[in-house]
Length: 114
Image (cartoon, rainbow, N blue to C red):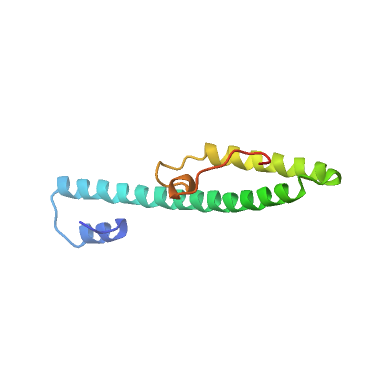
């Protein structure tokens, strides 16, 4: 049955079903809702991780370009700390295997100046 939770509920309402069949279909509808909620949460986490990964790339470029400029050392150190904090968040994010940026052919880099 390729129906979403709302379609299942409507289908149940439109049919005469045994109490057992109704209960099983209501359970199925609840599980479909849970799945939909979990999928939305994963997509939000993936979007956040992708944004952080893009920001990491920008920070790495900035660190690389200013790393040899002595007067910019405090800024480089600040960016390196920001980069490390983003790495911690990404590495602790509960994204299932196969769903994060590292599985898309972009291995995660270590934090800090290259």
